[in-house]
Length: 362
Image 1: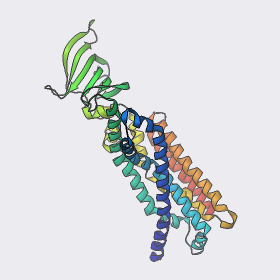
Image 2 (image 1 turned 180 degrees about the vertical axis):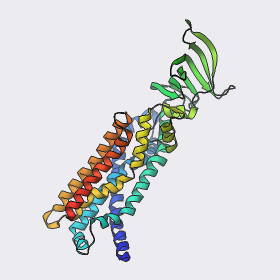
Image 3 (image 1 turned 90 degrees about the horizontal axis):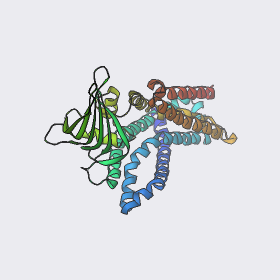
Image 4 (image 1 turned 120 degrees about the vertical axis):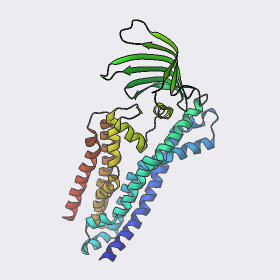
């Protein structure tokens, strides 16, 4: 019996892997093409060439691959199960006592590998490539790494108990322009309001130094002008650089730091809590896609039932991705509890998949 299970797992994994890899390559190529059609003009502007286009495409590829993995698993599973239905192999397996759950279990190692690849792409590779892309893209229009470049919109962040804003940030995050600092006391009240023409990090004084600052304190009628004001507890330049030119993918350390409220952050607690819960729930996606696609294996080839079941599986799989994205956005905005926003879609669609499978096997 163990030999039969091993043989079945190897056979189904081979069928599934070939189709899933093919679907992943096709989806990545399509997404890459659409992305380049949208951005190629900007990449080629100001003397850019084919090397710049290739660099842009290479840095975008890990993000596109990470987002395409669940869809590739869904398409690969649907095509695999349609093959089993068309060749009557599923009918033979059921006659031999092998039901849908055992077929799904045979694909579990392949789904686990897909989940691990997705996590590695979105949590380890994509944050690095997106950061490199953001720095390279900003450097095309910036004068130099050590000079503050104007931002499209003012940067706001929370640094401990202080609220900080800046109009310009250098590429390395060591210089700021148009700085506003609102210092708060332990009760959350305003202790001081500081405006400065600029700020520099890494000089003779530890931390930051504010230039041409104006300090307003509660109870004092006039502002105090200071040519040079130390700011030793300011945010690290690396954090400023990341917050000034944010990326969609966040590395685990930044995600956990934001969840704990440590360091400089530009988002609220709901954003980081939802992202953390979504990252924890994401490994379920490949298994869920295989479950939703499984009814396609129960179709009768001569009646075309497999295609109808495949269409239902595709609709449910894509519906899950849409629901997860929508509820995730609501959770990040604070409109839904993070736990509900991240875990409701997989539970609801898994229940739908189980009901469909039970109906087929019943």
